[in-house]
Image (cartoon, rainbow, N blue to C red; front, side):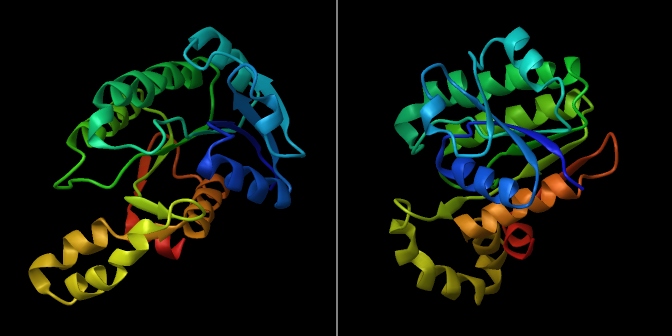
Length: 216
């Protein structure tokens, strides 16, 4: 069944690939982009340019959508960007959630991060707080928790694949290796498409970790 899907962060690394996949499957996609970024949106989508940190503007933009996929985040996160994680990653969710509530959006899909983890604590803290905001709002939601998404321009962790394979064979390391495993951009997009097309039960939050992303 074709759905009306609004995507924040539609011009980003995952957003563009997801938009293309959803359009190919016959969905009506609205790309929500910042002012001046219209030309970066994928073809065959509707586009709206707004300040995504303005709850009124965002609520108006998503009011006719069945599903909102929230992909806004700090690009190339690293420990030096702790302030950006609070301002952008968490700040955008503080706007998106009430906008979805106000617009009666049936399903919110949020890309979080695998947790717990021994590194990137500021990033994880911001994403975990965002998950709490979603849960407190009682939205029907899917939370997807990748660790690192391999794809064009994002391939250096592929060098770690042999280490992951070794860790998965060592019982004390197995759970951590699987939770913080690497996923491909294609796997991530497939998981997002699956989440959009098969929402969870109304009023519940479904969580997909790395193992679930890989098989979606």
